[in-house]
Length: 330
Image 1: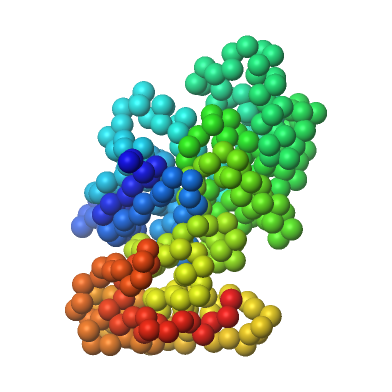
Image 2 (image 1 turned 90 degrees about the vertical axis):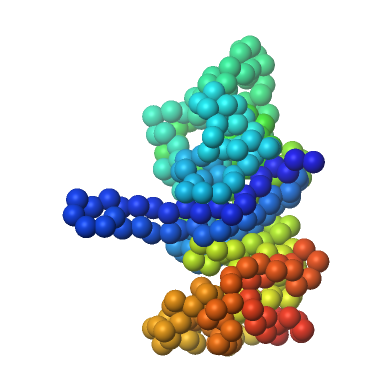
């Protein structure tokens, strides 16, 4: 059975060309492998700059991978022709982080929602399209009376609802959500998250949900993959990851989540910084310079994800949390 999204051994390196001297290369994605299952939400979490958004751009075909496999419904995205790529857009849609820059201020809601239908020549009948747009707005908590209004007349949460409606206009099977609530107020975030959860259930969508907020990921996602410096260091079902994290970086991230039960929790990631152990920067483990559990074996042991429990993979040679549950109460 073909899975909606399959990414295997993905590398992405940006090259800055110079007139004199050697070109500068910056590797952003390093041997990333992920699978998004049907009717599942896969959360991708990690600190800023770890490569989450770049992974989304490669999946969407906005950026070309340096090497590796990126498949959507069995189709290799980087090799698609222009016509094949247009067909893919009916399967794969995206909701971006900033609802303010995602909408053309010169177009009203009717035009924004009709544009993808016009491009793909769908709902040509006037009455059929009118009924469809009404149904689409109702699905995201807006009304038909708002069709003639422009983006500047809406709040941030309403704009994001319009962005979600536009993404759903083609009835996609896969939705990429790149931090869709991080630019919104907390109360509005809850509304959008509930909306995404309802849409996923009613439309049986597969969703790649990118966030840096573990609480958001726990609420919405079925599985969570943790990314650090362009690598996946751990992947597990959401509750399993929270109750029994296996990688020191995951433990450090969870320890930084505020909790009323443990207001003075230690932030392991901040106890030892890369500056304190610069000699570890070249070690095989990318987290060694910040890891309080680093051992000599981390210097040479190849970086690789390994199964530590059913559906739970971790890339740590030490695995300090393997035999007991985390003491972090999240």
